[in-house]
Length: 205
Image (tube, rainbow, N blue to C red; front, side, top):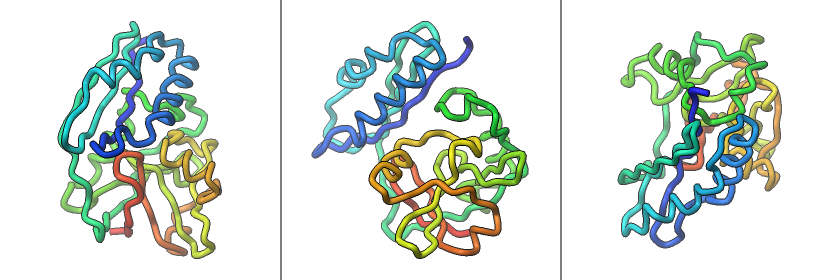
């Protein structure tokens, strides 16, 4: 299979890897589902690349033959008051595609969606499925704060990645799954998020 699995983690000197166990568990689930060996060596591969004394963005990639690659880069958090501009893509996702549930190197749809808008117009782009349901951003999960105190996020059945931050928010009761459509974005505050950066306030551009 010409496919690799990817986990993007944040390393903080004071706490280590953020959500490490969740990242490793997702990697193991995806590797099992896709028949890729080597996931059990991921923890050791990450440890070998550290420690460092500054925050890092860490990219772990598991290749089809079981090879693991770890790359690091300095990580700078967004400003606390940062607000992303988001747009809706014409490029669709297809909800029945099982690979959408896994973070893989197959990124064609996300790349095409991102290419629809210059970076000067959008910080992130949200994709929809064939039924017109909102799915996710190109590198983030989508959340809607509708004022009820519990965030709404599209269900996996809409066709999207089982994000690590998304999983945590669902398991702790801070979010629930709900089918969302473009008009719902006008009924609350938009938040885009991933395990690397956390939740990011966003608005339609």
